[in-house]
Every structure is written in C-alpha cells, then in structure tokens.
Length: 267
Image (cartoon, rainbow, N blue to C red; front, side, top):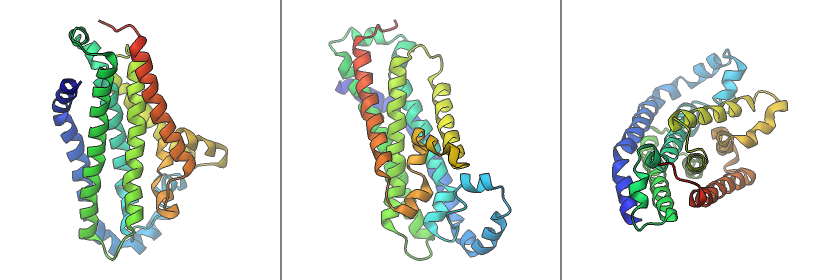
C-alpha cells in the first residue's frame, strides 16, 4: 500500500502544483488591488446598485462591502477557491482509481500481493493529503496577503471559517468523485463528468437565492453550505450543513470500499 501511495503522490505532484499556483497567483493579484478598491468603496457601492438583482445576489454584493478586507475576499476571491478547488478535488478523486482500468494497469496491480481495500486506501489517502495541502497552502498565502493589504484588523475566526469551509466542501466533492469512479467505471471522461457536476451544483446555489420557492435547493449544493456571506455574518457553519457534508463524505467512502471489493474489474 505504501508503494502505491508514494507512486500516486509523486505522479500527481505536477498537476497539483499547476492547480495550486493558478489559484494562488489569482488571489495575490486580486488582493493586491484591495487598497485601491477600499478607497473607492463608497463610489463602487453606488455603482453596484445599478447591476441586475440576480447578479448582485449571485456575488453576495447585497450583503458584503468592498471596504472590508474579508468581505472583499468573499466577493472577489472566494468563488475561485471554492469553484476551482472543487474542480481540482473532484477531477483528481474521480480519475485516480479509474485510470488503472483505462490504462490497463490494473491487471498488473492486482497480480501483486495487495488487497483491493489497500489499493482504495492508498489512492484515497493521496487524494485527502493533496486536497488538505491545496487548502492549507492557499489559506497561508491568503493570510499573508490580507496582512499586507489590510486597513485595520480583521476577524481571525471568520478568516478560519473562510478557510475551513472550502476545505470541507472540497472533501465532499472529492468523496463524491471517488465514489462515482467506482460506481460508473465506464464513463469515458471523468473530467468532463466532474466539471458538469460542479457547475450544476453551482447553478443550484445561484437559483436557490432567487426566490423562496427554490430555497430548498440549497440543501442539494455544497456551495450553499459554505456561502461566504453566511460565514461572515453568522460566524459559523450551520449544523445541518456540517451534518450533510460529513454524512456524504463518510457514505461515499464507505460505498466506494464496498463496491470496489465486489465488482468485476474491467481489464
């Protein structure tokens, strides 16, 4: 199992760095503009009132203010770390196990004295560590960026929520992607399939805010569980959302182990 883990960790290092560096550079660029934006915040707030209501709600412009560094992050950068991070987590998780069958290397792997459960554990551990590193490094860079550009103190508890929230959401999408790759091994492109799910979930989050008739859709999209405005105002992740995420994560992992142990491997 250790050998499988180390090989996967090494093989995915380059891909991980590309995803991470992309969001880090974007965030540094956006946060560097904060001092200028903060000086013009009052003028921008007036300008934003002319934007369509749907757009204002979609980017939390009705609740957050550009003059506050945490609010600014919630408006300008938070969507990128949640959306791009979710893509990274789900694509990575959905391909790490299924690629063995697509590349015809599973036959060689199973010929070795290794159990199927050990294969799943090694691959899953690699996913969890890379997702953790992705969010940890981004949070560290973001913390430094905020200290450089801040104009006054910011709430460290809210900052931690804005860091832990995306991590939990990324784990949720990663576990779903991992399970899908086990249940639907014949899907031609896990990348396209994963991106489709991510954008569907994001779309559900957008329309759940448009009208009370659709508000129950928020329970079906992880993007709503860690909504920036809600975290900033409530200073906590709702218990029901935490329960859903942990349930999905544990259930998805459990199903992955159970099905992979019993299903016919495509060779």
